[in-house]
Length: 459
Ligand code: NAI
Image (cartoon, rainbow, N blue to C red; front, side, top):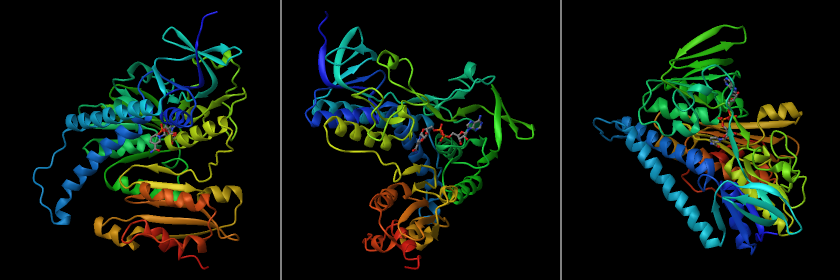
């Protein structure tokens, strides 16, 4: 029988979930192998979270320059150079990808750049092949991520990559489209709508629901919609896309009314699907539905096989994947650890950005939870007013009426994404309002708004 290399752990997929799990495992002394078929960092680093932040930061800088006079600064002939924006984005990605290679090397993780396939199992462990070689792992972590949902609608498949773009191509456009249509008013759609609107496109967002930003607190998502409308974005809510042939997107409402929207480019952002097929799950009997079925320790139905990140279909967020990887590795190491998702923050990096953690009012109502709400405009924060001429924002805190513990925190306004982890900690630690008030917040910061809102409750 052919000799294979034996590892304590094989990780399939080098996105945030996979590379972080591999690093943690190697640091803990496990002989670890990581497979990646495209680029370390996965979708998040190469064609998602990070490159989109680079673009959005260019848009923010451009917007600041356009409105510099408000702050007493003169900027003449402000322009944006899309070629330069995309080149800088590529440099940011290159830097961070090479950083992950260095991290893996430092940790002692063996990285194989190639497409891995689970071939089966023998007495030593799981057999995984790539690039004509077979490797054996005592434990397996599957972190193969997710792919765009591509609906079978006229014009979509055949124009993919040219007229119809996904998160991959939309970050590579060298020319700013005159008319840009976004299908799906979720996270990717809103961030890219924000970018292209700021840099000069006429943007229309088509969303099938009656609101944008999915499960976000409704008051916050309405505020975001109003602000983006004020900046020029058009929203077509309650509309389903019927076709996207070059030049025109056809959307239809619940009454069957058709609307033709003219477009140079279309972004398809209607959600993502877990990558469960083509990796050999059947060869070892791993069960999956919309994602690989896992428990709170990220264990699959097959002993010693774990699934983390987008592929388990719980939360398609990089930071959730990081934590799931740590839970899986701790479980392998025999250290008790479980996933808790109730304090899992989320951020949408629009301008203004929104961030939330825990329960929304809508979720409390749906679950019949007796809750109380306090909220304040961000303008109660000195730093917010000093840095945001004419802008507004909101901080909303939801608590359990009887227990007085914090259930949810929802923010819209500058720095929201940088503040929210503190709120997540309050929820994770099950702090009551009176406990959380004892935290000293630095002054002047926008984060102080949380403290102000806590004092709005009658405790
Ligand atoms: P999403 O699930 O956030 O939004 C998809 C939207 O498309 C929904 O609002 C849905 O109602 C709408 N939709 C579905 N079918 C439609 C149709 N036929 N016509 C019109 N609207 C339709 O998915 P998105 O934006 O593609 O993002 C994918 C994943 O990537 C998400 O799970 C998200 O968590 C993750 N992501 C996270 C980011 C962040 O944390 N800032 C940034 C980018 C992506």
